[in-house]
Length: 443
Image 1 (tube, rainbow, N blue to C red):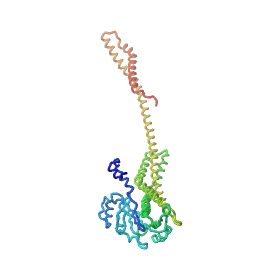
Image 2 (tube, rainbow, N blue to C red; image 1 turned 180 degrees about the vertical axis):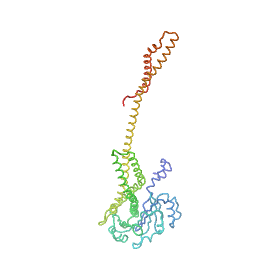
Image 3 (cartoon, helix red, strand yellow; image 1 turned 30 degrees about the vertical axis):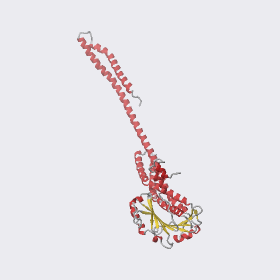
Image 4 (tube, helix red, strand yellow; image 1 turned 90 degrees about the vertical axis):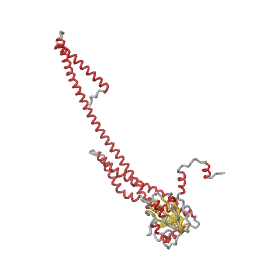
C-alpha cells in the first residue's frame, strides 16, 4: 500500500529537507487565484509602500470591523484574505507596492459603486502609501456578442477598447483606460452564464495585474526623460575629449582629469537609476506575459487591449530601455577613452624615464672617462711618491756605507716603479669589472 508524504517523513524515507524546501515549494501557493461569483464588483488599489511598514498596514487592516484579532504573524508572508460582511478583501505585499482587492456583489449600473462598498470610503482614503493604480472591475453575465452594449451603462459614451479573451472567446473585456473623478479606472468583463468562479478569478487577476504592473513599469519613464538632456551633454563632452586626444599640443593630465569627472557623473547616474530601469524591464515583461495569457481576438471596429497599449505604452518602455542602454554604452566608451588616455600618459612617462636614464648613462660614461684620466695622473703621482721613498732608502744605504749613488739609483728605478704601479692598478680594475662589469662606452 502506498504511503502518503507525511507518513514517508514520519518513518524517515527521505533525507533531511533543505532549509528552503518548504518556502520554495509554497511559493506556488503564495497568491492563490481568487474565486469570484458573477455578477461582481472588484475594487483594486495598488499603493507604493515606500517607508510604510507591515505594522502600519496591519494597524490599518485592524480598523475593519468584524475581523477579530488580526496579528502581525498573519502578515509575515505576502498574502492575506479577509472575509467581510458582504464580500472579501485580499491584501498582497510586493517588492515595491501593496495591493488591496475588494470583491463584493455588483450594485446597479445607475448608482455610484463607491456608495455601495462593504468598506467605508474613509478606510480606503487612509490606506497607508501612495496610490499608483485604482481600478473598478465590473464583471457581468451576458453574451460576448453583446459586450459593448452591456458595458455602455458602466463606461458611458466615448471610444473604448475591447478584446474577446481565451480560446473560443469565453469572455470579453471592455474599457476606456480613463481616470474618473473618483480617481478610479473602470473595466467591464462580460462572461456567459455558467462561467466558473475560478475562471472569473483568473480573468480578474490577469486584468488587475496588467494595470498594476503597467503603472510600475512606467515609473522609469519620467526618470528616462529627465536624464535625456544630461545624457546628451555627457555624450557631447566625451566627443570633445576624444577629439582633443588627436591634438599635438594636448595636455594629457588635464584631459584625464576631465574624463574622470565625467566618469564620476555617469557612474553616479547608473548607481542611482539602474534599479529603476531594471525594475521597469521586469514589470514590462510581466505585462507582456499577462497580455499573452489573455489570448485576445479583436472585435470589429475596436482596438484590443494589447493594440492600445502597444501604441503608447511600448514607446515609453522603449525610451526607458534606450536610456538604460545609452548610460551603459556611455560608461563603456568613457572606460575605453580613459584606458587609451592612461596608456598615452604611461608611454609619455616611459619616454621621459628613458631620456632620464640616457642622460644618466652619458654622465656615467663621462665620469668613467674622467676617472680613467685621473687614474693616469694618479699613477704618475703614486710613482713619484714611491720613487721619493726609494731615493731616501738609497740615500740611507749610502750613509750606511753601501756603494750606491742615490740619484742614479732612484732614476733607474723610475721605469720599474711606474710599471709596477700600473700593473697593480690594472689588477684592481680587473677584479672590480669582473664582478660588476665594465660600463659601455656608447652614448
